[in-house]
Amino acid sequence: MSTRVDQKLAFDRWCNAFEIEGERRDRLWTIMVQNSLSPDDVNTYFLGAAGVLEKVADLVLQANETLPARIEEASRQAVGPVAEAATKRVAEAHANLAETMGERVADEAVKYFAAALASRKLQVSASFLVGALLLALAVGWTGWFLGQATLAGQATEIAAILSRPDREEWVTLMRNNPNLTETRNSYCKKGSTRAFEIQGRVGCTIPLWFDAAPKVALK
Image (cartoon, rainbow, N blue to C red):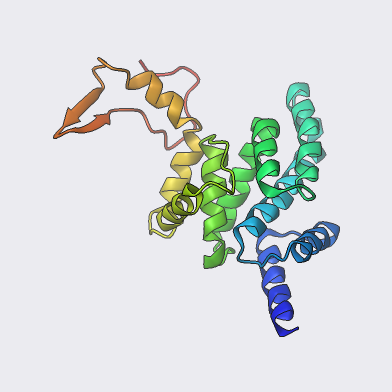
């Protein structure tokens, strides 16, 4: 009993950090108990992320008067998959979200997590989630299934970056450089004057934007 009480207290602190309230919080707690998860379990982190993204989708829809019709429709389509994330396996839900939630919702989610990090509302135990979600949403990586053996190692490295004094700089870089893979493919092709190799180490000179990238790409 004591363990369950401690878990509920930890869960409440966790939800408070992400401002998950009411029915959404109750639903996440029920799912957590039914699946014998703890607040520190990686599955719970992604389950909570689904709740945050559901909230973000709601906020986007509430602002539909200022959204272009195309973005509004994309947001409406995102609500279904996001809401379903609370009742499906987390791995399946994450893959579904990554494919369907749309650029607007992803952007708002990145801003939400970045603001929470900057305001120090997140506890150290949540740094795993912050790193994984920021990178997955801002950089556009998909297919991070919970069964992959590399997930924990990748997330640990990301969490270490986000514990550095210059973490806000990294968050800024991730937010303003939304597709590093595309940038690398554009500037670092074999034979490019921007690509170089020193002592067997491959490098490349690419633009990294500290502000929003311009509409016209550099050559």
